[in-house]
Image 1 (cartoon, rainbow, N blue to C red):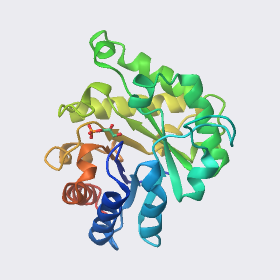
Image 2: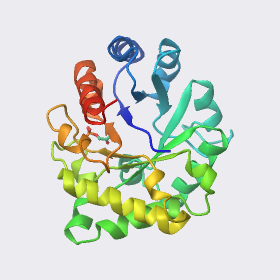
Image 3: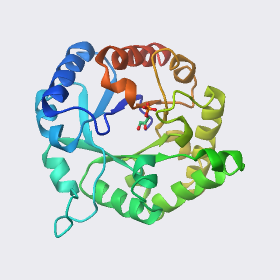
Amino acid sequence: MRDIILAGNWKMHKTIKESKELALCLKEKFAGLPLNVIIFPTFTALYSVSESLKGTNISVGGQNVYFEKEGAFTGEISPIMLKEAGAKYVIVGHSERRNIFNEPDELIKKKIRSVVENEMDVILCVGEKLEERDAGRTEEVISKEIRIALDGISREVLDRIIIAYEPVWAIGTGVTASPDEAAEIHKFIRSILDDMFGRGMGANMTILYGGSIKPKNFREFAVLDEIDGGLVGGASLKCEDFYDIGKILMECKKL
Ligand code: 13P
């Protein structure tokens, strides 16, 4: 079923102390509100942040994962370890993982399987680079990313997948896609899901927009039916800004 979600990807920001401070501020701000909020702290802060948010409407997740249970994989972290630290969600296929760390679609596919096998939900990120967009290849790129990542997944498992459309050129640049453009891509993503899993399946999926979301630009996205929420980077590091984005989302979705 479709859900309305506000997600904050903290990326490689904040010490444990700073993370706890931000988490406590968010806890106060979002207390009792009917919004599903998910934050993604660094691995080192994950456990203490999840402990300080226990019993609230804010969940935590991992920004990345490796698909093996354990073993000689220096520098990696397994789904079991994330889960033990309090993660309920894992971001897979973020463009920074794809482009800076060269993660291919086949690896992303394995990661998704290992996350859902361990009963956590996935936020699968997809999106085109500027040169791909300029070459008119946006749909082709997104289609390939989704088709490989979700190949062979059962309909039941699909319940554990959230998709985030993050055009790479809009991440951290201050430039967003136009809201209508983003909504068109969301529609396109639903059509791929229909094609892969059967008619009507796409309409049930939660799809978030991400890329330079700020309190001042988010309303235009949040009012659109196609857009079920946001995956926020930079603005999720500021308690007030993230809360303001959440308020906009609740207003627009009449929560
Ligand atoms: P910004 O909001 O900083 O553009 O980052 C978006 C993002 O990559 C979220 O995963």
